Every structure is written in C-alpha cells, then in structure tokens.
Image 1 (cartoon, rainbow, N blue to C red):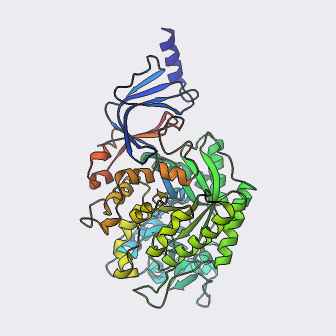
Image 2 (cartoon, rainbow, N blue to C red):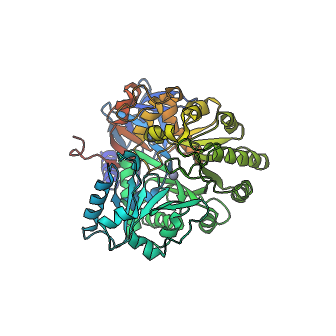
Image 3 (cartoon, protein in one colour):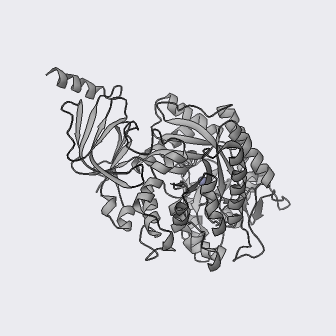
Length: 546
Ligand SMILES: [Zn+2]
C-alpha cells in the first residue's frame, strides 16, 4: 500500500520529517493544571513534535496515523526538567578527576596520585566532588596533603559544593599566591583551602579548557542528562564560554536537551543577549532567559549568610556578598530589559535580603517577573509568607536536604531548623516551588530528588521516617516541581513541563510506576527511553538494563 510505503520512507528518513505518531498502551501520568496526578494511556503527537491529544483507555484512537508505537504497558512520564543545574560544569567534570565518595584524606591522595600518573591527565590537574564530611576526622585537606601526592604539577581540587577548593604548592606558585596574600572580601584562605571569593585567586590562573574539550564535555553532559530522563534544564550561571559551546553544538545540530540559560552576572548577560532575552533557538533547544547573582556562599563551608552566628563557629555569620543597594541595582538593571532575575541565597539573612529586594522591585515591575531565589535553603519562618506575596519562585533542590541533614544541624543548632529546606511550608503559602538537583553538586538524576521530596530520606531510606518529615510534599507536588513548576520558573510553561496539547512531546519511558512505588523504589527508577519532540533520542541498551 502507498501509505505504508510512505511510512517506510519516513522511517528511513525519520530525522528530517515527522508525521503523526500514536504512542499507545502506556501507563502514563503527569501533573494536570490543577496540580493533580492525571493518568492516560495514549499520546498522539503531531508532525511538529507537539502533543495533539492525551488519550484515556476509552478514547477512540485515530484510524490512521503514520507511526504507531506500542508502549507495552510501560510507565510514561513527561520529560523531567531540572530547574537548577550547571551544564558546562557537568560537562567539564566528566573530563576531570572525580573524587566523589572519597572516604579519607589518604584515599584522596591515592586517587590523585593515580590520576596524575595517567597520560590523559592535563598538566593542571583539576578534581572535584570531595567532601570532608565523609572523612572520619572531618578535616579539610591542605596543600601539604596534595604536595605529598603530586609535588611537581599544579593541582586544584574543588569541594562537592563548589564553594571551596584546595590547591597544592605548585598551583599557588603559578598563581603567585604566597603566605603574604590576603583573601579578597567575601573569601578566606587557610592551609591552601580557598573559600568562596578567594577561589578566584587560583581559578583566574587555570588555563581555559579548549573549545574541543568543552564540546566533548557538553556532549557527555547531554548524554548523561538524557539517560536520567532530563529533557530540559535551567543552566544557572552560563558563562560566555558555556554559551558559545551551546551555540556551537546547536549550530551543528547536536543540541538536544533544552537549555533555559541564566548568565553568570550582568556582563556576560549583556554581551550574550544584548538588550533583551533571546528567542528560543534550534527548535526550542536554547534560550537566554535571564541572569544569576549570588547573595552568599554555602552552608558546608560556612559561607551561607545567617541572621545569627553559626552554632558550630560562633565567631562568624557567614559571608554577605553584596549590600542591599548593589543587589537592587543589579537586579533592577536586568529587570529593566525584561531579563529574569535569579539570586542564589542559602542563609536566612541572604534570603531575607533577596526577598526584600524583590519586594521593592515587584512594586516597580509588577509581580509576573518570575523573580527566582535559588536554593532558598534556610529561611527565617517569619519570611516564608513573603515569597508568594512578591511573586517569588523558590527554586530548591531536594537532594541537598538529604545530603546535608547531618551537617545542617551542626551549623544551625536544633532551634533554627524550622525554616530549613521548608518545601511544604513554602508551597502552602501559594509560592511556586520548582525543583532541581544543582548538578554537578549532586547527581543530575531527578528520581532521588523526587524520592527525597516525598520522604525527606535518601535513596537508602535514611534516616528512617525522614528528616523533619513535616516538610515532605506530595508526589504530585514533587513531580510538578520537576516538570510544570520548573517550566514555569523558566517562563516556558507555554511549551514545556507537561504533555498537554500544544506542548512538546518530550517524555520518558521508565521501568516502574512511581505513583505506586515506595520512596526508595522511586529513587531507584531507571529510564528506559527518552523522547524529545516525538522522537526517541536515548535508549538504555539491553546490556545496561540488567
Ligand atoms: Zn548551583
């Protein structure tokens, strides 16, 4: 028959043209406009890669479609959106020494020495993801530790939160840092450990990665993301080099994951985007949406700016990065040209400062500017109600809570935990709650994040019953955080974040029904297939699915 011949031709040329596709016999679920779980078992996709119709079991199927895919009853979810990740860093990280899981300084030294002995390692050795909280003595590594492993080449090892890093003596020599060097404001140096703003002293001297390395990194990052079912991401701090890499990949037709980009400060923003946010490029794969600023550091390295001193170091309240006027000026400059503003705030003082700035700006610019606070990790309970009123989106990372729960009690003390990772309290005020992972700080896998959101426990179910379980959210809220709400937070809810008609048919087939799974089983969910705009772009190979 003519039509089947035509279909065959389309199949053979399926990269260039898409016709109507019926994905049928699936166990599909998404979050509907009202925030409820919505079940369906068929999906009709048009030749533009967008959803035409979601089908229930009794809905008649179109008699004629060009392609019919039998889902064999498997579970289907909308493509997941990470509302806060670092695409470039994830990519470059794949080319560096990965120290995650290192359990002692001795092991760190041994892994460093063995990486340095491989011929593939560049002259400057960059490592990442160590965490002294996993060491028995919780001691930070020092330059002397690193010198013992690699004395002759520069070494720079970044802590898991990205806010602190340790240099060996060769790195400090090349950077011109001596014992007389003073840390800049907002930074600290101690035994070769460079915290927050002090990191720039070394980072400015690290040779920039080559374009070919960046391209390879982005390709690796994209492959990882698709394999975890992440079809869109807010890139929270895009440098000009990151942007150029994404443009190169887009121009070459190699960009698949959709990136909502937030420039790393005003200068790169204006240089990249000029006077207004860019339109979507490459079939809605890339858009420069706004800008990211930092109000403080992170809790692990005591850089988060608190209203009262740290419980485990009463001499400090952390680091304030900007005064109120500067924050308001920067945010206002960006908002004036309709750029979206996202500000990193971890400590309760930083959050109060950013909320205050947004409240003022909301008066000037109206409330649908999608003001974003990245992390919103420790809030004074008195400030929580202010978020919704000023139209502020809380962009939060459930796996930060499960990674941090040991440390956060030490830093804050038991009396200051009521507004910590307070997802439910925040959502209850009517504020938008978007979820992400902050990869590569955490794994980009959203399923441990969904599990943490509903259980306040890690993938192993620890601690039993969850940490401060009163802040759990429902599965619908958790899934919305990684789909609909993450799209809203990126001003992309008109095309992403659901499988409503008119939205892109970005979806994933997974190995279990998360609506009936225990949290530890949700965390272990494996993605089997990832589809974008109605086309399969990633598939777990049978050897991997064992
Ligand atoms: Zn981040």
